[in-house]
Image 1 (cartoon, rainbow over the protein chains, first blue to last red):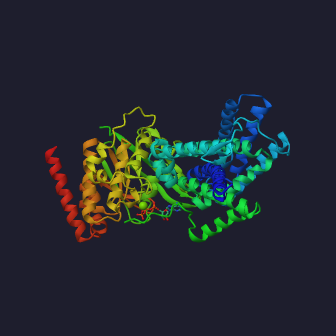
Image 2: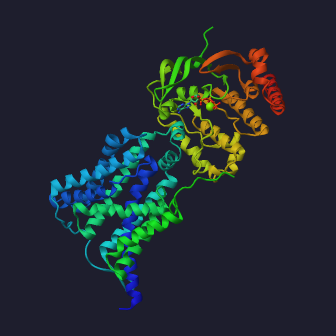
Image 3: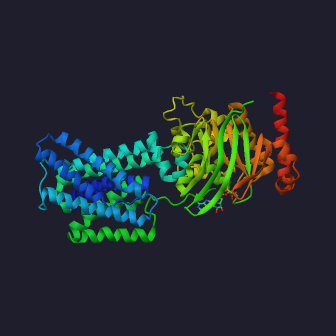
Length: 293
Length: 269
Ligand SMILES: Nc1ncnc2c1ncn2[C@@H]1O[C@H](COP(=O)(O)OP(=O)(O)OP(=O)(O)O)[C@@H](O)[C@H]1O
Ligand SMILES: [Mg+2]
């Protein structure tokens, strides 16, 4: 096999993993944009989504599509409960305290999952099929290709919603100036809820894809850390940043993992993070203040 | 003769952070269909009064600790800020507060949420563009790149979208050139006349405020010290000295011109 072909395959696999990172990063961005909370529990919601799917599909034996819908809805429900129960009462508190609370939420979710399903890794019921896909001559794993496609469609959907849906305007207005959003009649607490619900539902959906590629375990939430790097690189409040940052990190991780060895993956990720923080502290697409003409 | 008041502030006290008292027994009323101005020096508590009415005070850790505020006959105390907006009370905040990273049109779209659940028909943005043609030219540009005057127009434009019965206007003249101030106040007067929207207008520029307002209140240190129809306030020796005397020559010119406009308007109507 030619070097170029191999390189292409590695890159494609990286793009697939990157799309999942983008999707998870999107959950961070949504929640951060609306509520200015860095939700460190996103990785654990990803994991929870995968376990919910496991419970519905393997445990109850429901058809895959029903299990997918239920798991995503379950993620949304968890988001709603977290927002109303824990985050909203803390609004206006020191951001560090809220940040710590989300870390706490993450640990609790890990604990609950371990109690319910144990600590050993499991495989999700196969529902994506196994036949390989070829792009020209390059081999792509079917699961990774599907993950890429689904992520791309979902992200494109979000971008369109943000631009053209009135609710997208409400979210961006709230992100830009909360008091002014209130003064325009926008139900700001409602926007908070919706952002957490959609964010956590998205994370749960990403979890199903991630789990069906690599299997599930209570520790799979560390994926959230890579996604956190993605949002810091891309800009905490930028959807475009999440998209491009995710692909970038996915591809670089794949290159580093293949050509330098698996132990270099994380080094590369955090290397990019540090470089980015030195060059552009707001991230690639993060908002700096607009200078008025 | 019973007067139809749309806003009735009755003896309120406001405290920030549970410690700093800013309003000390302030009362004022806005008659339906009229422009009422509230004047006072820096830090007198004018913005605080408006935030108490719109309930945006809660966002700044402030609270009305005594007294009551009635808008359109109902007590405002338990209503969330957005719920009040949806009842027809629109607060144009100090410093314009437009959404800088949204386009002009998206800023107006944001204000359509004020119509939610009210059963009124959205009127589209044409009305805003009629009053402010310049916003139409720039409707697809980012609001953050508008000039200060255009941003103020957009802030008032958002209020128009909300089809309110009362607009609270906090220092619309802030940081604008005399010419622009005049343009904007001319439009404020005509919005009031054309649409019958009541307004509570906070200003530091007393001469321009008197030019459009029907009634005025002057406040110091958190309470009202003087009030009356604008004609009487303008004639008052103290007001002339402390509020009108302070404004520069240029403002006098624009004041006269607006006054002139207003007289002509009376003859016409
Ligand atoms: N969020 C806040 N927390 C604490 N104190 C505040 C807050 N906002 C205003 N104040 C204080 O309340 C007083 C009145 O402020 P306010 O903004 O109402 O004045 P103003 O009359 O609008 O003044 P200006 O003409 O400068 O806008 C000031 O002494 C101010 O320091
Ligand atoms: Mg003020």
